[in-house]
Amino acid sequence: MPSLEGKDILVTGGCGSIGSRLVKKILADGPSVVRVFDNNEEALFGLQKELDDDTPVRYLLGDIRDQDRLELAVEDIDVVFHAAALKHVTLNEYNPFETVQTNVNGTQNLIRAALEEEVESFVGVSTDKASNPTSVMGATKLLSERLIIAANTYKGSRDTRFGSVRFGNVLGSSGSVVPLFLNQIREGGPVTVTDPEMTRFIMPINEAAELVLQAHDRMTSGEVFVLKMPTFRVGTLAEAMVEEYASEFGYTSDEIEIEVIGARPGERVHEKLISVDESAQARELENMYVILPQIDVSGYEELNYSQADLVDGEYTSSDENTLSKAEIVKKIDQHVSQHVV
Image (cartoon, rainbow, N blue to C red; front, side, top):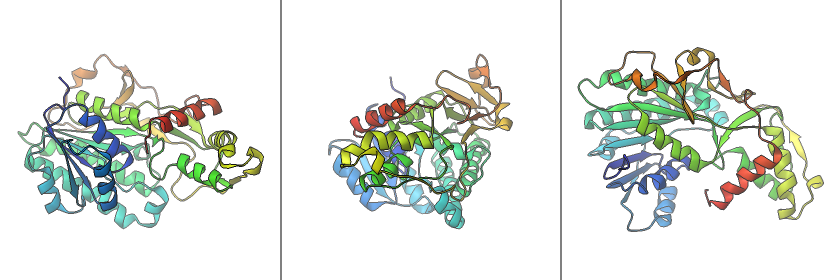
């Protein structure tokens, strides 16, 4: 039986790229109800129009900064998927007070509500930028992860399992580079590249959502699951998209200029999913890694990973073989064919 069948589920940030895809994946498991919690009224309305009226979905307008609203949202919930966050690196560099309010305080509010309601499980959606962070967004997401891990020490006799899932760029997500480049090509260029030698992890939304659910099923308490992801070089992505899509908008590839504009505040050349320090606590599974909790947490079962391979050193986007132009285009086309927006 699917682990979410008959369960009451809450998805925060449920109208975002990952959140909305999670909602659709969860619905396929036959839950009793899915509460979609988001502070974007327009996006909630759009999701409501997209999903069938007979689906067991409830649309909740609210903000994770609001403790009272969260307590109502979590009432009678069995499983929480926490995807709500401020995620744009550069904007967060200039607005750190707001980022802390949402990514740190908001997570703490949700944990408190989940503990009071004694939910069965709680999965936080995190980012590669939380590993050895160099940005405000990354630092707040690392704190969010640590709050979720430590929640296992606050739960007392409750059986709630708290854990996180960490991954890199999701193909086609809001603010990501692929739709940005596509819009720039549509307008005739230039395609603006911060640094062509930058590398990034990338994963289709469907795969990311599926692995979040797999991590939920495997989680005992306190783990951070790290999804294995292919990587791309930003310069190669720009070249591949210009060559493939310029003609669709009435241009030749030679007419679309690629302009190097330099790194933005908070950006780093290569992303990191597991740091050197974290690797000592990391284990390799078939399609993901798991970082085991460094503190003593109630409910954690190390036996589940006793046969897993140790991880030798950090896991960064520069370590993997980057995708070729043809492989990049194939992934973009697969994304478009699945109508994931």
